[in-house]
Image (cartoon, rainbow, N blue to C red; front, side, top):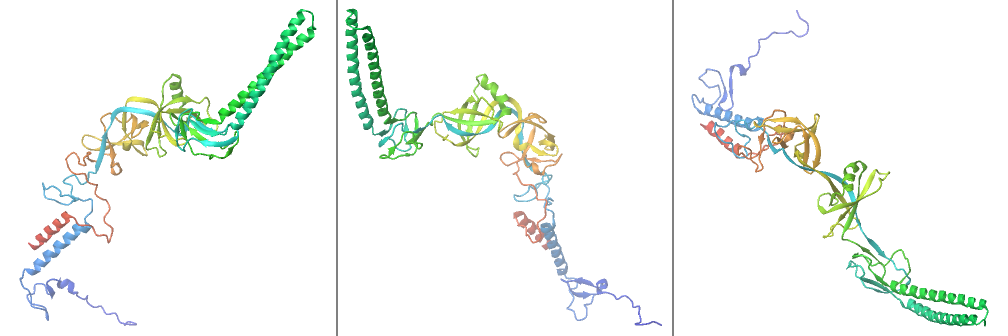
Length: 477
């Protein structure tokens, strides 16, 4: 006796899947081994081969889809033995698929320059502001802006007439005083004669001598005033004090200029030769000072602000006599011929100071040096094209090369391109400069390690089309 609903133990229901074969292509359900059609179904195909042909086609399509969408990108496709891979195919040949292509360079002895980099400013050897030394009316400006001038070339003219008039006045005063001097000298001679005859007092004779000296002083003062006015007249005629180029005109003709005015009339700058003043750390004095004291010439090369284009090459001529205590730097001056005038006054430049050259040291490209947990290291490719890590000790760097103090030997091949995907002992494929490796194959990128993202359809190439056709033909057969 049970409460609630009575639980009835029924036999398990037999599902059609355990007794009936399902085939979407063959038609409705049939009992296994039965030669009769199901009730209400179409006539049976019996032993017709179309059912098996459809099944083979489905299997072929499934295999093709797996090959195109489910096979890992890094797995090489199966190819016929002896068949060469087609361009664009991921099959690189037997043993080629897992060998990443790398570029190598050979370690060899070479000269390494010891260079000190510094920042400098182009400083002309002479920059002259044309300031009038007298006041007057500016009559003429004889230069054009930007004109190249030589020392002594006429540049401007100030009205000289006031100074010429003063000069004439002082010349007249000089003539008057010269007459008085001559009269005093004649009286002194007569007084000397009278003194010998005891006809005049000695005091009178001596006083006349002093009168002559006074007139001589007056004549000398008159002559000095004349010379001063002659100098003022010369100042009215302004000439260039140096060879160089004139800048913009600061005062136009017709203006009244004052002596010692701050603005001036124009500025003349010497462009050839040109100097660059730059500063280096005080720690580099041990390399620079001995060269300067022994009369050696240190070569300085000037580059533009971006430190890319070379502007000029010169020689260091001056080492300053003290270190700037606020910056810890010492200044130097280098002289450049500047024939092409690439060094412009006050231009900011980068200076590379060559202090020494190391002859025949072991050097490797800087692109082959890696930096990580072991420090500085490089991947070395042996004769069997196996890459191994080699810890190195670096020295002086010169452009694209760096000195190797230890860790590498001449003839070693270091990886300069493609080192990101390398591991210790990995076999690599060396790619030459022509884009082909040692076997003559074109250089290819290493296969991607990540499968295509969902929804992203992989592009089909010629190999995919051929593979699809082969699968279809096989299914048809």
